[in-house]
Length: 463
Image (tube, rainbow, N blue to C red; front, side, top):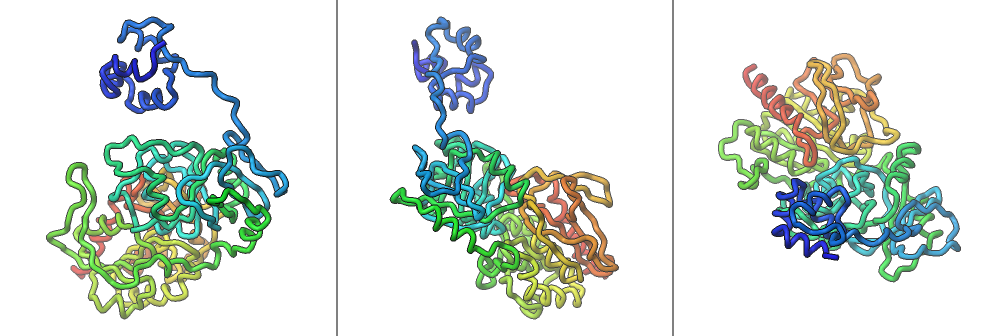
């Protein structure tokens, strides 16, 4: 019997094998990982190599899966012990225990546990400042395949407190990768948990809302489940928590980098048309890049900037960024600043937390969603055009449409749950959306909104 490597060599190497057999290179990578060739590929391999059926590696019978590898383990008793092979654990405030295999950095973190349905862009997700105070469970099982690189980041360091995945992180197989995801997580002190049934955990979050939990990957392999549960129970949760201060810039700075293109990397704005002040409640870098690509010379100011701080830059427009935490808590200092900008009639555009803060400044209310929207496949309907956009989203709070005052109209709604996704003032040059038009990760259906903002600026300048 030949080995998988023998057969790949006979076919001329991984890329040649994929080309000759009409399959993807990812399929060949899976052959090498499993050391077997699936039966569906046997006829093609036999025809291309001239080998006999007995020559093909079919792999060993699948081992009986252990408790750690297959299913979520729920227990409230520390006496149950640690399942064989488990090196990390997730303990929820209600006492549920989920065992798995640790990766990334050793450590223990307490956070809100949420799920993300995106299939790509895990590095952008982990560095999105809106995930401050949260541990992310990815519903897509193959996390880590593309490795990590210094370009796909939305902030200098990850803000997510932990990472939960179904399958063990594999070696990177992307041409842009510069390091292994595990190594990248270690360098930033982020713990990970693999090997549990993420579908069951996701269903639990879907039905009961995002719980508080502690992810523990101890270096000594010792677990005090009672202490971990007590820590989860004591954490207050995100409602009422202002996290924008924690992730915002501490001082103002200028931004002129534009969006990325294959072969050229990031561009640079050389001929700005507009002056925009971006209030950083946890701004993603690609938002700033999209503003620059639309012709905006951007000045970024801290979340706590007052109206005077913003207006002294004499901006043509003001942008309100995304960010983490409860908008009502952040609104204590953000709303007066936004109202001061609106009183001067400066065109204003907000996204995500910025959308919620604009709504508060206009007199509306916000509330915490049962589950939140997190992923790159969220359908949103534009009520003016009737078009549906597939959007990237990451939020646990929403604007209460019933609280919108006169002079504020609904522009977008979620086709998942009908919640508000956009508003516009009919009296002031201000609008906002709940989702992320800059994507990263996600579809680019909504990039037009940045140009709608600059068009609003041009109209205002023209009187």
